[in-house]
Amino acid sequence: MNYWPLAGIALVVLGFALRFNPLLVVAVAAIATGLLAGLDVVAVIEALGKTFNDNRYISVTWIILPVIGLLERYGLQQRARALIEGVRGATMGRLLVLYLLFRQVTAALGMKDIGGHPQTVRPLVAPMAEAAALKTHGELDEDSREKVKGMSAATDNVGLFFGEDIFFAIASILLIQGVFESYGYPLTPLQLSLWAIPTAICAFLIHGGRLLAFDRRLGRPAGKERT
Image: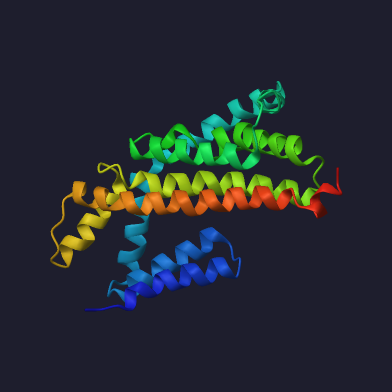
């Protein structure tokens, strides 16, 4: 069994750790994986081009950006902040835990595009999380505000990534099935989906704990001095 193609994973981890351009890191890792698997350069480039062409519909995402910009110009973020400020007991941690649950459940049902950074996190989730943090802990410095926004984006990533594999008709499950089958382990998509449930539960508990712990850190005495 040839394990050299797995070096592409190490390249991705190393590239992200060194904060290189993500697109460059992924492209280099993909090419390296193909070459280490025994393909020639032309075959690797053809595979990349075919994959891009088959998934060109993702460019439709850009159509939504002008709509989001127009909504923001007319006060969408301000409305989101006002909404969360009027909810008693709302905290940043609780809000993001609820969004994490919502994102995982909807992704598990196949509705993975119901959320996302441009259409949900930036105009709604991040402003609401920031408003909840301000309501609970008072004024925040710029670094804390950016961390709240980053945690909002991370919550969407975790919810989608660990929720979508529960839906057995998604491309990632079919890819995993194909890899296992090529090594002599015939598994059905439903079997893979069922085994994704414990992982999704662990991801929810771990990231949910991180969210609540981050919320508590914002409320420590050093943070209260900012109020």
